Length: 142
Image (cartoon, rainbow, N blue to C red; front, side, top):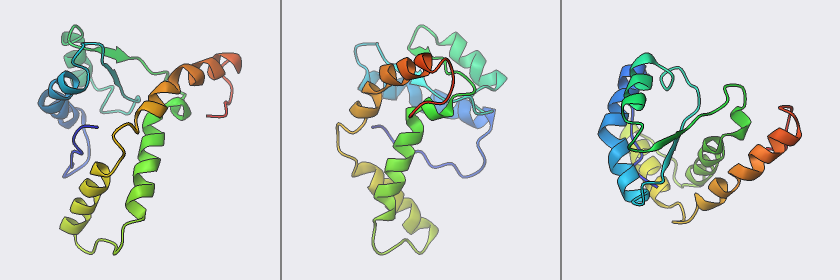
């Protein structure tokens, strides 16, 4: 599933660019060694920043970017993954008491995800898009 990256402060375009530069190529080469990996991101301001967009355009041959419609966050599997992660985290006992305990608990929870967990949300993408097309852009069950 890759690393859980801690941000010390608010995510900006420059900070997002740093994450892309420091982690994306390594992650893609491990998880998608066949070169068929796709980067999925929502249209959050840092993701759509000028510096991040420019970097992604310069590195388009290294991986594909799944372009996401701006008004369809419910179609984004990242939301499902976040919800499942929080569900695993909230089951931890005792609850973390210090910032370092919190970081450790988050990292441990992330590592406890079943190895094939992502397969189900990834496989749901074609159904999500078919549902969206069928609803002509209207609300879907996702």
